[in-house]
Length: 165
Image (cartoon, rainbow, N blue to C red; front, side, top):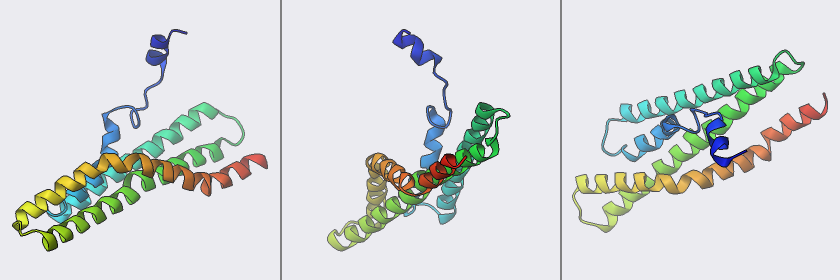
């Protein structure tokens, strides 16, 4: 098959291959702006990211259900798809990056306060810029770490269940 045909025939996953993926990063952006916006907006960014995680998990469950038709073990396979996606996305898209950006921004604001004489608004905007600029650098290492964590734990349970069927 021609490589161009391969690309066009590939099914697009709206949660992984389109702009919708960026909704999973909403909480990192919220954390970066924490010093400048009301905390309710930060929590709202977590709500957006959590809805993204849930929608992706439901979507993967629906796809697993379609793929397995009426075959035995369908319910288990759907549950595994939903749980695996939800846990992976919750860790890799919300919990770990949110904590990381929160701590980077808190440390930045603290260090800027101790090492500069900049006015507070300048320190807050600088902290936000540092937080936003950190996001692209943490995505891949966090994704790989969560893959390793799940491969070393939860996914072993799934694989053991498959062996006993």
